[in-house]
Length: 335
Length: 305
Picture 1 (cartoon, rainbow over the protein chains, first blue to last red):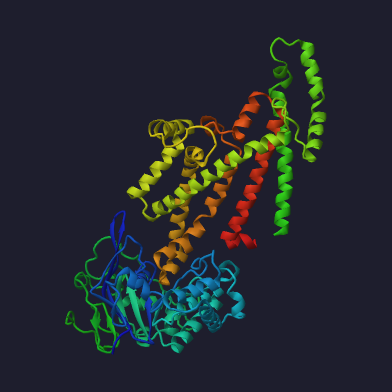
Picture 2: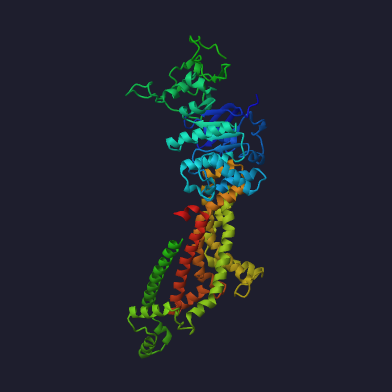
């Protein structure tokens, strides 16, 4: 099967006052056409930087390397800036977290939508306009034609995010990257936007890389999920499996933090993960989750822990046996 | 739009009233034209006569009322020194000052905006430091000194440019450079600061995510948002220049409004000073209005609210 997006061993370093921040520490992932992969993790785990690295939109100071990064078979790691800008917006598009500030206040909605198509296709402005109206309707904006002349400040956050989605679709991209697109919105709007994204993704069978910290969202939309912690993927697999039978203590910890009726007794405390994220400025020896792990075995976890494949599409980065393996296996045994 | 214009018009009337009364009072507190007109060796009686002739013996409110009612009809009086109507004097001198001011501000913007953009694109590099250094020198060096340097190099040694008068466009080259250089630092630093802020914004990232080419991102998406404050300051600077630059006009012997104002103050030529100052105030009001209109065009958020 040819994957749409393939990333192998991606590393992103950010220079900071104290030295170098190893924000993304060797992650590999792939997305097939028409597939939704959710990248989950808490703030600062490197999930946004991963998405920006794919788009080639990292901050200037950031350093990116990988052994491989391809989109539909085309190398996007060493592509020239010119070629990359041809690909951006055309074959892959991005939706950002902040709809309030992601549109240019000085230009009308129509202008900003049209330019996305005019940049990549030899079409007349009228055609671009038609496409803009078509997509605005598609994302559920009423009176689409009359919206073209409006400016971002005249629209609500939810509408702006719909415009951003329409803008991402202008060239019919194969891959959509959505970086917490619903985080800044009201809860009711969140659900609508989520629904919309999933419908559109199915309709146009695009690959979707959805970045979120919300496991509730993952359960609703993801085909597969990749859980990130401290710049690494600690667990990945089909979403349903990972959410129902997590193998990594961090995934389990995240799931315990979700309030669900029936599972938490009235008045009882919600789960939390004790401790703090490790400092990414230095080297991390062994398991990054060690200090916060409820079932750590220090003498084993001090060595680098490899991502262990289980053969059913799942993999996790822990020395513990998989959750569904009945008896706890005697120590090491896995390589 | 109409209420906006009306509000600005009302503001202009208030400004005119305040400026004219203040000037009127200050002038009469500071000088006595009768004394100056009568010259040395005049008797007390002579001075009294002149005072009565020009109405300077009347109480101040009466004098102001007389001036204001005439001014309303467009009669700003005569210069007591040059013996010709003040408006005619201003009309004669204005073209020189307007030419100089427009050349200077265009030159200043043409140099400082690109320089500010480049500095913002390459912050803390040699180019940025060079631009900043130029700005600091521009702010620190007195105009008269810079003017003399130019005259020495391009006028005296190289003999490329005329050093005084206003007969041809060549005469305006050096004065415009001096006056423009004075206006540059503020515009450059505003452009740099504005661009740095805008280039780090989310919508620039969106523009790049769409695959737009760098020049489009820079000029269409960034610059338009960054120059809003530059336009406002440039308008004020132009207003300042239209009032005439005493130093530059004097050094290059340009017969503009700055020189007229300076000479009139020396001669206690009340009506001339009064008219020039009122005119400067009017120009300021007009230019800030135009700057607001331009900004509303650049930034649609201002348009609606």
